[in-house]
Image (cartoon, rainbow, N blue to C red; front, side):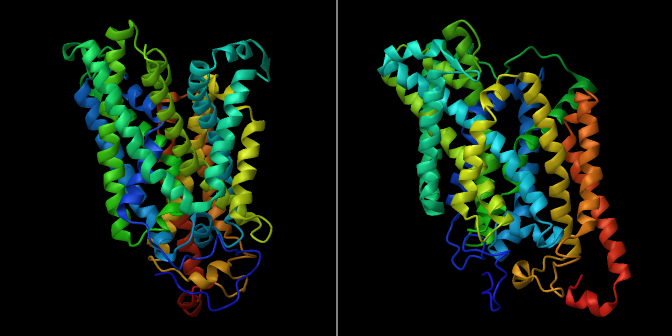
Length: 483
């Protein structure tokens, strides 16, 4: 269990939301439900289907998928432990490596990433909501002909309704979020299986294939593409993987977290991917064209009840992923910048409001922008991941001084120089710049591996710099954990 703070914490580092938990009551099922909410979305559906259209045979895709998601599972277990052990969220755990104030750098990076994706996912959910609105109120179709800032008035209506629905769930706090994701993930599965069953029935089992594209690769070429598929899986989960500590902190035990990760990642993602590709494959014989967007699929069903149920399901699914991946994270991240003035709720709403002003529909509708955005995200997230893991497992040897995570005392274990570990920043900058250069160079084949490259470079640089620091410190300082 996390330690009780015996010294008065600094107001610049502590508030009720950032404090170590004294009650950790999430079971493996709650973690499992978290991953279901993260995977079962429009974005997850499209991504899973895209893996089966890479030009590989179905068994090669399945092997790549399993390898990739198992890597994600291991990484999530590793990054989960410090937060579960101390009961602290991601930005507070970052204080160990970056310093009590330097941790604002990784916190802001993750927070800004979440803002962009929060807006995009809200836009995707609003597209599903608009199907519901037009089914019941066809007169609203007139609003689709007028536009403001690149989005129709109907689009604005759906977007703002979704924005408010998510805000209501979030406003009631983490307990409300836990209850929502506990039923949202299974509910989506139920409808997904029904949709897949209907598609198979309409298309005929003989017309279903696990290959969504022509098989183009064989031999070593196939091996290279399989590695790319593995990298894509890891990169897709890189955001929620980085700040998974925001949720693992609630785990009743580390064993419960690992069990939830196993069922929520390898088992769940594999099952969801197979259901996705079966459904997508069946759209060709049923509708005359292959449809990779589930919203488009349900909108074509000539049954109002089925279409409404499907659209409602994907609205629910996207609310789930948005809350767990893109609302909770900036709530903690922005609160960490000024704990005295920014609460968990305030941090979340800063992100939600900012997501409107970036006009996410313009980002999503530009494939080139999305391409560069994904590669850029990997360039930033990979190095952070490598630095945090090396610090906790190799430098700190899994030892956490919880009191010092909230202390401005110069002798604190995480004070370093003025509350900032410059060595962590020195390791972060070149690793990030390398990923940016790779992305801007147009080397897509290399940019797909930005997360792995950044993680490795960041980890190696940080470890080398911290070894130099350890060699320069007297034995007494090392024993105290002083900077």
